[in-house]
Image (cartoon, rainbow, N blue to C red; front, side):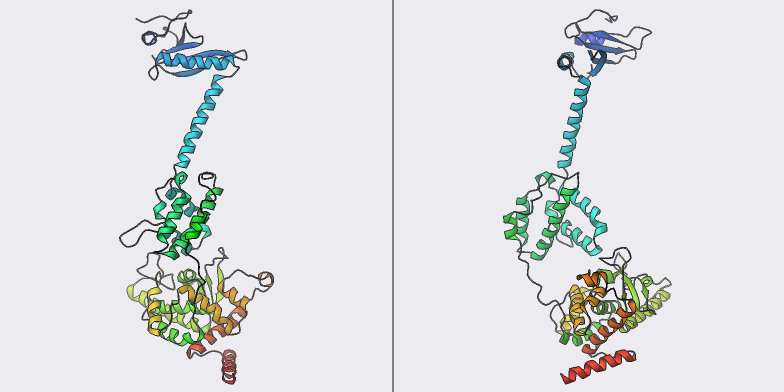
Length: 452
C-alpha cells in the first residue's frame, strides 16, 4: 500500500521503501528513518528511489547518495548511513571521505593495471619510443631479438619473456635465459643482454613503468657469471695481400648491383645500411660526391667523395638500370642498389654472394662490417691521416683538434679519397686511368716499394 510522505520518521523496511510514493505536484520527497538519524529514502516522481544520508556540517545542510534500492538491502544502506554519521561526529565531511575512497580505489585499479602490463607490451612501446634515435639496422636487430618463432626462423632470445607481466619479471628469468641459450647462440645472447639492460634502464625513466621492475634486475652475479665472455674480434679484416684475390672474385659476381655494392663498402668504409639505401638523387657524379644517411648527423646526412673508379662503377650501374627500366616501360628505381625482391626496395642480403666470393678466393671470412674495418685499416697504409679517414667514414671526431678545427673540404677529401682508392687498386693489380697527379702518386709508391 502506497504511503504519503510524513514529517515524522518511519521504520524503513524492504517492503516499505518499495511502497513509498512521491506526492503529485512534487519532483521528489525524502522519507526519514526512525532508527538512524539522517538516513532517508528519496523518492522521485519518476518512481526512482535511492538511499540518501542527510546531515549538517559547519552549519550547512548537505547530503550524500548511498545507492539505489535495487542495488543494496535497506539494512546495508542503514549501516553505511551510520558510518557517515560517525564521520560527521568526528567533524569530517562524508562527501570528501567518499571522494578520497573512490580516488584510492581508482589509484589501486590503475596500479594493478600498470603492473599487469606484459614484457611484450612495454617492449613494443620502448621500440616505438626509441626508433627515431636508432639506425634502421639497430631497430631491426631489436625486433629480431624479440621476434616470435615462425616456420622460417627460430624465436628471438627475448621472445620467451613476452607474456610475463612486468611485475613478475625477475632476475632469475634473465639468468635462466642466459644459462639455457648461451651454449646454443652466445653472440645472440650477448646482444640480447645489452638490449635488455638498456630497456630496463629506460623503464626507470618512464612514469608509467617506474618502480615495476628493479633497476638492478640485470646485475646479479648469477647472470654476469653465465654471460658468454666477450672476445676481441680476431681477423674480420682484409689484409693488403688479400686485395688482389678479393677484387678479382667480387668483380666476377654476376649481379653488378651486388658487385658494385661490395666494392663500394670497401672503398668508402661506409656502414652497410647507409650505403644500401643510397638513392640516385643523393649522388652527384660530376662533382664526385654523395650524401649518405648518417648515424652521427641524422638531420643532414654525411657528404663524402666518390673517387674516380667508384664513379665509373656507378656510371655503369645507372646506365644498366636506365636500360632495364626503359625495356620494362617503367621509371628508374630511386635506389642505387635496387632489389626487386626486397620489400624495402633496396639490397637486403648481399652476404651470401660475398661469402661465396671469399670462398672462391680462398680468403678467411670477412663480414660486411669487416669491409668497413678494412677500409679504416688499409687506408692508413696509403698515407692518409686517421682524422681524414674518420671524416669519410662518419666516425665521431675523437680529438679536440679534429672535433673543432679540422673539418676538411670536399675538394680536399676527394683528393685524398682518390689516393686511397688508387692505392687499393694498385695493391689489387687493377689498371685504371687516373689523372696525372694520381699517376705520379702511384709511380712514387711503386718506386718506394721497389727500393724497399
